[in-house]
Image 1: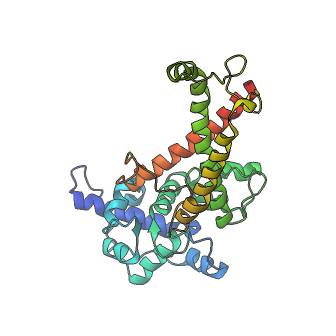
Image 2: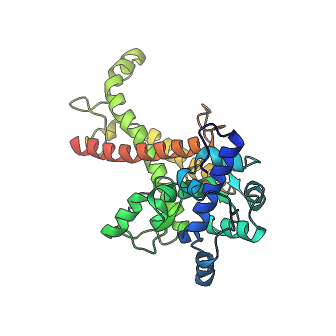
Image 3: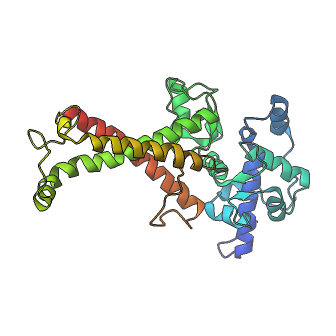
Length: 308
């Protein structure tokens, strides 16, 4: 009998666990891409969990995976669901069954299901198993923008739209390198998109207040390779910028990049505390917003340059 709307909280939690079990056990695409073909076939053909006979199978279709469910299963708040946590939550399963679930939900083969992998499961539950539930990647595969063996074909990288028409990313290591470069250029573009027009608008006020010469070129434009006027800038300024950039890149950023389990673009810079202490769902959302705004800024600054 289907529970009524007045079901107790622990009953609803059990219902959601049934959904998680059904989703994990029912999708062959959950097998990690790094596993050998024989292991992937074994995972795909292994029997589903031996559910209690009186358990209503319709609950799996009525309940959806949610971020709140992940938080409930992740008892130690580590950001990942391990074997023991899943065994504790899904009490009606054998150890072998739960281990099989971990293997089929664990995309990178590290033995746990982290939040990005869980988010992938949520997408697969709603949009189907193909391409890890990523609609954009599915379209990209259909249009030939990426190859089926591309690391973008099924990955948990935030903002994955399946766009790699030149096939530059051959593996996950290269993909991380390209993502690092994309985030870096996006951040520079966001600064440039604000700084360029701000310099032109505010320059007259600053030069007047400081008694400094006006360095804007004809038409009130910022000195640049396109506008000219760079010869009026003190060469020491450019030397200082190059030296500072080289120091930051080689001495600071390279050390940061050696941190274990570091995500591309993570420099540990969060002076306003916008990222620290947020839930895993909110962190993924913030990462996506930065990425999308960076992509938009790169297009914007390119358009501004063309306009000038």
